[in-house]
Image (cartoon, rainbow, N blue to C red):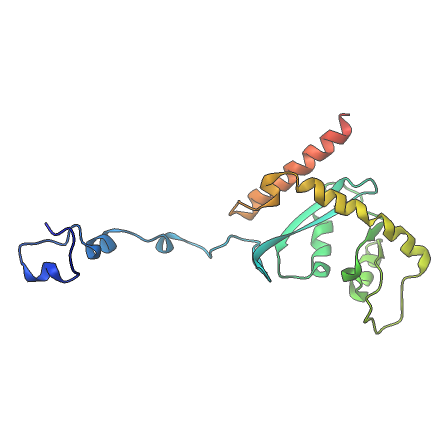
Amino acid sequence: MATGGRAGEHLADPGKTLEGTWQARSVRMLHRRLLCRRKKGGRAVGKTKRGKGTKVMAVADRSGLPIAIYIAPAAPHEVTLVEATLASRFVLETPQRLIGDKAYDSDPLDELLRSAGIELIAPHKVNRVKPATQDGRKLRRYKRRWKIERLNAWLQNYRRVLVRHEHIAENYLGLLHLACIILLLNVFLR
């Protein structure tokens, strides 16, 4: 039996078999890439500057408790994900106001939310060409935006939410929902 040596050594002796050589092992073994039925990385995984990731979109009420959670690949812009995030909310009623950062300064998004009865409050970008739509009175509410950042910090206290170990996107979204339930129970059971 040939167990080592050079690659073509078994060809010199007709009595030797392929067992034990690297050629036999590669014939008998199925590689992992041959068993994968879908694209690597899982669903809702997109490219970022640092690699691959998942974007978690959240909407909070006035006290910072979650009312909507949505996940998407990291590549699309937040403006394109607002409608899907609002559609995946936990409560029946729609929010009256949506406070976002400068990335949400979009006239089409403003029109879309206005048609749904939601007021968008977002400061204007520095390079805005069109006339201003926000005045100082509405932007006073922007200082409450820290509550959504606090919600993100609360969600990142859970290790399985902080780093996505789940290959299946629905499992990761389920873990996010579980974290939101725990946050809500902590508030309501005090």
